[in-house]
Length: 200
Image (cartoon, one colour):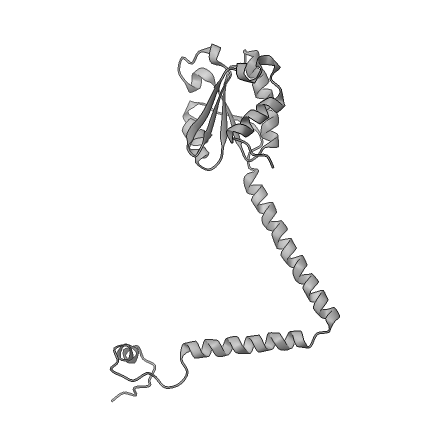
């Protein structure tokens, strides 16, 4: 008969079924516990041999390392949030990808405009400033009747605010924001209240 203590797959199966008695000697768990114990003792001895000044220096180094890791993580998070920064003009074939699909991950502010309308020029200027300031929000502009066939010029400028893959808010004309007297601050507050941009 084969050695019942042999380390074979067949013997492991027989042990699991209770046919063979448990293997003699340390288990894998015993070995791992022993290794952990040796590592802990070495670390304790390593720290025990140090003076108070050396321990203070070691603590300072650890604090600096943790602070540096935190700063790096913060910079990476900011870089991910700040990926836009300008008003991008699109055409109708781009709308689903650039607006609807993109709004599943970020807020998207869409400006339906026409260059010849003074209110649209004002809106474009203010949106360009806000896009540079609020880089986590995607700002898009598209000519009104290219986006929506036969869209009347009297409705321009129109803002469409998208989030979570759907349109959340629509602003037709500038009357609500003061017409040609619309200030940058008033537009920014409107977009903050809609949730499209956040205050840092």
